[in-house]
Length: 401
Ligand code: FES
Ligand code: FES
Image (tube, rainbow, N blue to C red; front, side, top):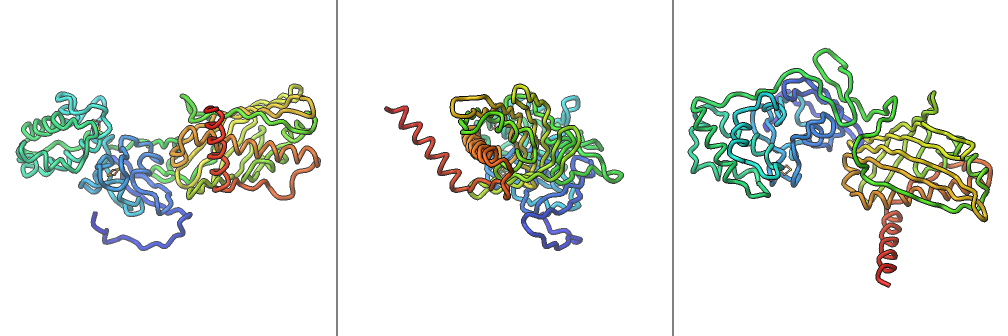
């Protein structure tokens, strides 16, 4: 991609965001992104265009191929900030279910896909190859293996793919029809749609702290059940849970920012895991509070500037026990973006550690009768990992005995 003549030099800190205007599948879009975010993540995470797949994320596999100003480009190798003013076409713009592009029809007719993971890259790459009119469509079938070698098919289903591309080249000797699904529409990011901020544009705002917490459908990324024995009476523990200021002060790395109506709370939380440090802005909503039974249910949503998002359905309950109380925490966690890369097992382990730290802080708070003067600290990255690995080693040793 050539540097645009009107490109502006902007100096921003890594954590700051830059506003970029571009056209995606015919729709004017303004997104606000940190400078280190690549185009594929913006398309997938902020605009909901998950047809652009990510394989290697360093320019080898071609899965992420899109058109940038009419030319094929690896979306994983382009920073989104380089795309200011660009016209982007993704596989969603090529055709729709109702009106498929000839390439899509040919891939279907020739069984040009097995798992389908490479298909968006193959489609966009072959479009770029054949779109140059007679010059492109004059490519002979013998040349196709080399011409199409920029996209890898891990299922090795190349025969059907090459037959499809050869068929389309033969059927359109005077040039390939353009994309069939480009036009103004609302692009909806995975965290929910944003209203248009100016005429003709769809704006993706900085990570939203939504007005209400909506949990995704489907299975959660991880579930956690923690039982903590506390050396204070159940009544005292419930007093902490029932006062959201005291409760928030016990959450590792969390800070209560604003109390809203309807038992809703805005807050911030930081989590560090290895080199990944996430700062979430979010909303917590107490949707159920039963003092007589010492239990409550909280829905929470948090998003960070890098596109990570987490939603949680948390149930807290206190029961009397010999010597004090048992604090029960059951949570279903839904993770997306970078944080989802931790995987189900690690996310569960880390969340369990966080709940254990929370329980210890609640016990101290209940014992002293007041919130700590400093909020509970976020879990240290190394300590958290060491604790998690140590717990797994202990569990493995127990199983072997
Ligand atoms: S994901 Fe972009 S080239 Fe592999
Ligand atoms: S069809 Fe599976 S990667 Fe190509």
